[in-house]
Image (tube, rainbow over all chains, first blue to last red):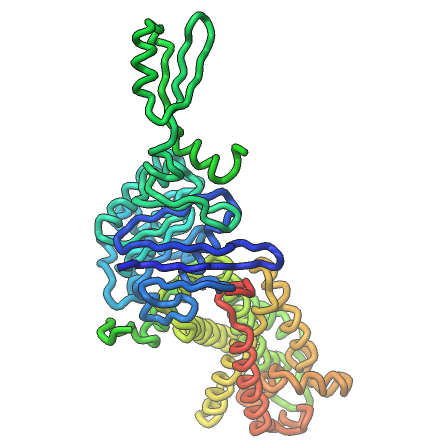
Length: 278
Length: 272
């Protein structure tokens, strides 16, 4: 069963069409990444799914319910990791997690969640004293303490150093392993590649591609580029299947140390999709 | 929707938990706490010491009049500004967004705020009464006057809190909240007979304007609790006017509630 169904989603701010007809289907238990440059419509889309923003058109179902009119029962089944919250600054980590756990009918034990996000050492520290990365991990704890069926993360690792990002990814993988459907937005390709089962690229309010990290934008079937040097001249040829060309080059005695065979990287594919290469 | 959804946590229980957290956060922010409680007390000490002559009523000093009137000021500034500024702060730092994304109703949030305001105003009143009794020999009244005090306190806190919530809709950035919200507070103090007593020395149009708003009635009401009944002569109506006071404050509670329902937003965006 699909956890999230979106058909023809539209949202306009004044004259600017932020989301211009998006269709999405996200299966239960899937980790889905919405990838796109700043201003592409990622946050608007996710905020509509979370029930934080109204839409202008289209049909949206999250756990079978329209977020625009959903009640408390629905909100108890979703989790939201806020992008830049600085609330509850004077409470301790443990107090904050326990307080938020008290909103939900079947919360996870606060201590376990704090351990899960790696903040056990900080449980008694005031939230105000946490580093940026620790604060975001607390936000994840607050997003998952209610035992959500769907978890939304909007650009969760923006501003992280590489080590903190990898730690954060582990946390998301662990949550996915619990069977939670995860929807995240990001403008980092490696993040989408590391975490997502499936991803969609959004640019100027429309989806320009959808697939797995390996197949996105026809990446798996794209032509390979073969480059070699012969007699001081660099040759480049594109082939769907480079096998015959390589045999020929070997037979001709080409210097194989100058040979490369490459397919488009996810980054090449992505840049082509969002139109940066045109 | 299936009917076997788990029952939700009762709004009242979440509201009390919110109240506990609100108080905890307030108490831990030392600066805010010290200023909230010491400012009205300091004003009372200053006014009470500067104007300490007796009126034509033997045994009643101007300091005692200030002690009674300043309770109205204490409640107004604590309830109105705490609510108004607190709401814009909660909108800005993500508190409201987080609650709105969780199974928390607006009522639960406001129960929490009301618990905070009740705790703060009660403390404020105690501090002002201590200053009044210790420094200016203000006598504490008998039981029947405390009954008046009780309904006056509840109506005053409710009216000021509701108006504070409504006023927060006018605040765009939390850092300007204090400045914006203090404009009506300070203006009303001067025309409502809190800083200037008897109110009858003000131009009559000013008294008319003040009579529309709650502060004049709050101050008059608290004077009726703590001052001898002969002092009623100095009021604008020449009497304590309890019935009219209850009506005006009750009306402001209704107006405040209507404004809150019409203007409350979980975020400061129009489309959410």
